[in-house]
Each structure stands twice: as structure tokens, then as C-alpha cells.
Image 1 (cartoon, rainbow, N blue to C red):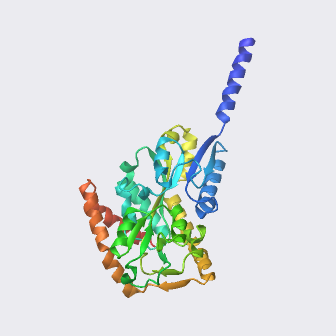
Image 2: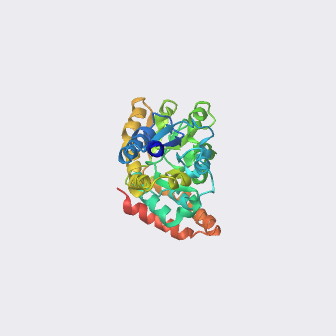
Length: 339
């Protein structure tokens, strides 16, 4: 009888232990009020909790609350400091050559289509670059626009003498090709740099501008609008520690798999596309000056930045990648999925 009671007690303890939810530490660099947390991470976390019968739950850490700096997020995921991170592969320049292609100038027209293209590029070319990580999504943001405090920008010559913040290696190369001085820094440092005049301006999509209150510090906004392709975009990833994923039950893995991949990537891009008009309106309501870069001027921008793609193909080919094929596929897929 005593042995039976002990066995039952052990079984009950085992069931209780197995019922404990897996808490996923999710880290990112945006404020908790940003679209990225409220419109993407929180709904995603709620969905995986529901579909796993609450055996998967998230603890979200915005604004680098787990410590470190935005460029360290990828390594934090690999090391298990965080279980899931949302960051820019381009914050660690040269570490992920396969996915840089999505950041070349004038590649995408919208974030939803560009994000579908990005996931396919990852599937075909990028998996070896992300060892130690389980990629959940790759996406790009809505059309990158030009914002500054010195002068309206409507042609390439207007960039001369400006110091412009850009997020990644290729966007810095683009800024230099346009004639400005690029200043590399993560997005959270940008408001301070603008307010102190460390930079004259920056390139960012509309969604981020009011999130960081940059519309309150900026005089001029210059846009390249459809049907022209966007000036640039930036690639993001939501990535999970591979060992953490491997430790999940088969049922939990199915939930993660069902909520990651190309459709999740495209949904994030769509959220960014849909956010742009309301964000832009906040700058309009302040009376900031808007300028549209017309088709004739866009051609000049494209000519000035063409060598960025040419140089990129040479660089990644020298590292053993098929640069020409990667660029061709990124262009073809981005055009195919464009809205």
C-alpha cells in the first residue's frame, strides 16, 4: 500500500512538473508602446499560448531590459540570454551576408511583398548564416524615407554636406553614394543624435518616426512614393535560440512552426505598411514640410546608388556566395510579391 501511495505521489509530482508552462524570454530594442510589440509580439504570444493550451507563454522584455545593446541581441539569442529576439541582422555588419541583399537600394515597393521575398531568400540562401538560431520570421519595414533639418531634399545634389544616420552597412553605403556623410547608429540612439545636432537627418520608415518622437525634432520629410520602388528598406529577424526550440515537446514545436515562416513574415510587413499613413499624419499635423521626389529625380538616385549593388555582388561572391543569383532572385521575388 505504501509503495502504491509513493508511486502515486511521484506520478502526481511528475504531472505537476510537466504542466508547468515554458516561459519564453522575448527581447527587443523598441519601447513597449511600439507597433512591433503591440501589433506583432503581443498577439503572437497570445496565439501560441492559446494553441499550446498555455504550455508556451512569453515574458516580453522591451527596450533592452535584459541588458546589452541592440547589436548584441543576436548573440543573446545564440547564448540563451534571451529565448527569442527581434533585431536587425545588419546591426552586426558582415555576419549575415546572405540576407543583406534585401537592404540594397530600390529593391522593394512595400513591406508585405518584400517580407515574403525575404523569407524565400532565407530558405534558399540564408540558413547556413544562422546556425544556432531557429528563424521565426524575416521581414522588411515600409518604404524608407528621408528626414532632415537642413533643407528640403528633392535631388541627389541636396545631400551634399549632410550628416545622415543610417541603420546598417548597406544603408550607410547608399548614403555615401548619394553624397552625404553616413553616421551609423542603432535606432534608439537616433533621437538624441538629432536633438543635439550630431546628425542633420536620418532615413527611416514612417512608423518609427512618431514612435521615437522624431517628428517633433524634424523640419523636412522627402518621400519617394509608388509606383516608384522605395529608396531602401531594412531587414529584421525574429529568431529563437535553437537549443530552446529543441527542448520543446513535439506538440509545442508544432505550435511554433505553425506560427512562423513566410506567412508570419508577410503579416509583419503588412502591419508596417498599414501603420505608415497614421504615423505620417502626425508629422503633417505639426506643420512639417513635405517634398515628393519625382520620377525624373528618382532615376538620378538610382544611378547614384547603382554601384552599391554592384559592389555587394563582388563582396559576397568573394566570400563564396552566388552574389549574382542572390541579387537576381531578390529582385524577381520582390517584384513578384509587390502590391
